[in-house]
Length: 484
Image (cartoon, rainbow, N blue to C red; front, side, top):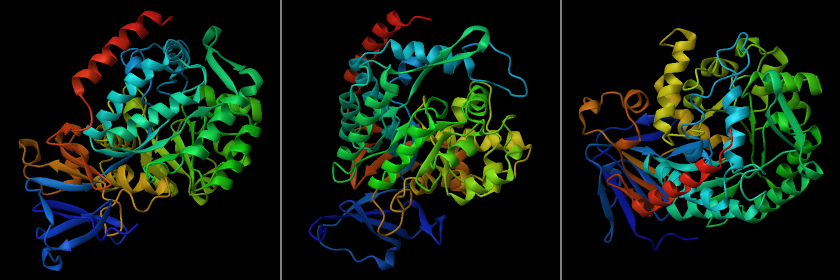
């Protein structure tokens, strides 16, 4: 579609983080950025921009001008109801060689809360969560849907409604409804039980695949879909192989939860005689369109240095992306071991928030700090690389070189971040500031596809009082139904 008739907008007087020569680069002070319609049309010296009648401008004085953040893993429908229940849930089984098993949160609390949800509760949660994502600078988000047992019993219309809420707020949404063969929960003596859904979960799988095919590309491409076989230990080889076939046939990305706990790793070894990477390779899932959500426990001891040579080569050569969720791990006493090790292996990496807060600046900070902590070195990871994970790294995982970057031809997904504050001064290294000091509250403006959805820190597409009141009411209902 031609954009010649559309007005042009110039962003000037700010510090621009542009994409040049394959990396994020701070441009000189006289630089400007222009977009027309949904696309960036110019970025560079002011002298190279020729103003036309009708051009508008945004004064970015005291602002960093950065690409919209690409948040590649999150759950909007249940997070507001699990918050306060998961974080200090006890682990009732021993954790040899590991700092955490995620046993209590993953196998006890999470299923209980999800069973207590109804569709209207999920929609109330989604509106506030998507608004928070917009407010804190995430412009592209991967919403990981919900499992069968969450209220609605697999009704795919809930996924449709949730996606429309995100689109209505103005975000770029990748919608990924989950399906799996087995439900699971905490068993006796610290064990885990697995129980097949009726018809091995295939009706839900077919509904999810049909939705992904029908909805992909709607809203002028701002809504896209992703295949999401649930947790790796809840999907049999046939389900994963069929997922790969559908992905190839319809050019859909895939994301799977894997590396969440040693219990998961143990099940893959006992049930299939495979490690996590071996199982993904044998079922054909590895590839440049696969995202591994979590990636914390990928070996028996949770240390990436223990990854076999063939496993490391398969992960690297397949160009699979590992999506790190550092804050949700750290607040439960765990770490990823580590981002530095994945980088050393040559693996692609991105970032997601998973649950609360839906503030990717928070996860950038935690990613940098926990990596340095694990490696016992401030040189283990640099802030520019962490920022890359939150932007271009996520975009590459989605096969979108037009996202996560500020360059001519890229989408006009732009965030203006305040630097006229005490904590930002002096802003001599924008990457250090963004990763180690900034947070979502510093976001001033957010533009998605050339449309402003946040201005002066206020989300323009939501009535905050009404949305928050509705979620608080839902929380009371859900709390009364949770049975632990």
